[in-house]
Image (tube, rainbow, N blue to C red; front, top):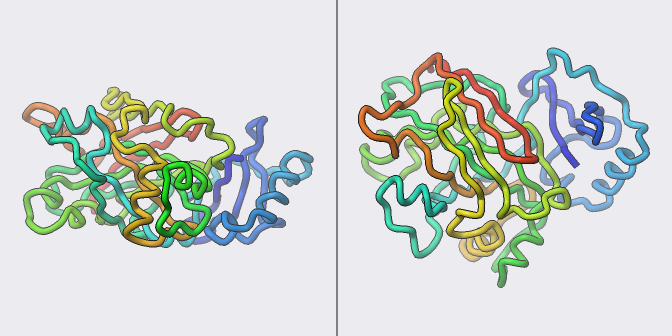
Length: 285
């Protein structure tokens, strides 16, 4: 299923995109798309049955904003340097274990919302990523297979980053990752049963119409199931938590000088096969 949330910011309603591409209203069935729903197999079953029966009310998508597909996100765990090609382009050694950092849930915006270049920024960068949404509490998992079994679904994430704040200003990466609007998410949360192999997804990103990233999750150093298993050994993952699983090659940081970092007015488009497409116009904070 393709689950999403539509409407003004803070007033989104739950919806579903059916097999024919029609937007359907779920507000008569569920309160929202959140961790509570994803952990409730009975409720998800009712949504699937209603979608299959074709009786859900249609919504007019014209002029309707698409919000983040997940409400009340608990935490966003991010995996750094998780693609072989990205490690090569930045001159980094592939890590022996996953590199973990965090994004605050309040960085999440809709897939087509404006992204703000921070004040004083000269090195705002792009990163298309596969986001994993947790559907079952994951604690001390033993195998990658268990890790995959705890995934409710997948989405497109844009892990916007400010490289000076991240790398040159001391401390951890978090200063360069948590600026407002730095995590567009969506358009859809595609349930795990509709993603045959999370290690066989193509990711692409364009800046002002120029293709910058053209990768595949097959290049991940630590695949999705292993990432979930690994993270669960250090913290408990709950339904509605998100893991951003890293970016492939093609970021501005990896280009020769002068590196083409983002400015207000730039347009970034990104997509993952089967998970939808985002488009953001960058503005000034």
